[in-house]
Amino acid sequence: MTSTLPNDNIRNFDDQITNKLISEIIRDRIKNSGTRFSANDNIADFIHPGELEILEREVASRVKDLLKSLVIDVDNDHNTQETAERVSKMYLNEVFKGRYHEQPRVTSFPNDKNLDEIYTVGPISVRSACSHHLVPILGECWIGIKPGNKVIGLSKFARVADWVFSRPHIQEEAVMILADEIEKLCEPKGLGIIVKAQHYCMKWRGVKEPNTSMINSVVRGDFRHDLSLKQEFFELVKQQSATNNY
Ligand SMILES: [Zn+2]
Image (cartoon, rainbow, N blue to C red; front, side, top):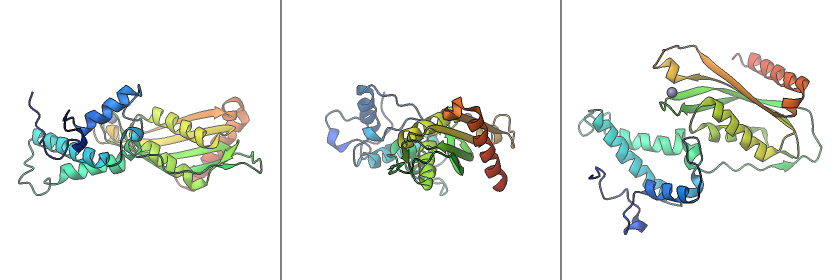
């Protein structure tokens, strides 16, 4: 089969012998390491410096093919002439940056004062896309912590959440992945996360239900074992939601 891709600037310059696409090179690295690379996995460790720019050109070339298959006149329609490049940049560096870029730096501090009262942070904006249709999932998230060995700054929760949600997801898994990352950073005694989001798969297409949202939660550690603590978490979030009129 002949590739429709131009042979110029989307191949890895260092790999002239095999002449592989950069996506193939990255994929081979991941496979050789036995790592999973589902839509909601971060693969930044397998992308070497300078390769993201080459990948951006490859994705743009593919998006252009998609537009052509949709019978859009990308050569003469001034609105779509640079759409492929815009979409590629948007996927790799904005809406799916949590796949291709490393986690933002978050410094953890030892919990010297032995803080052990629970606190909640929220609402934190949730911006994601469903893995099934790649259309937006937009909503809010609340995180509750019973401090353990380490603490991180409040704004860091929003940064980590943004990084985790900026991938193609299903909401149930997104919450679990966020919980895993926060556990790694804070080692809390208890952790609770609630996400309430609207899915554009349901609003924009399919059943076209504009007001349906999905709420799900995960509770770990003391939040799971201690019922009163779990209730306190949900109560605090309810107060925060009311204050924020959501
Ligand atoms: Zn969907």
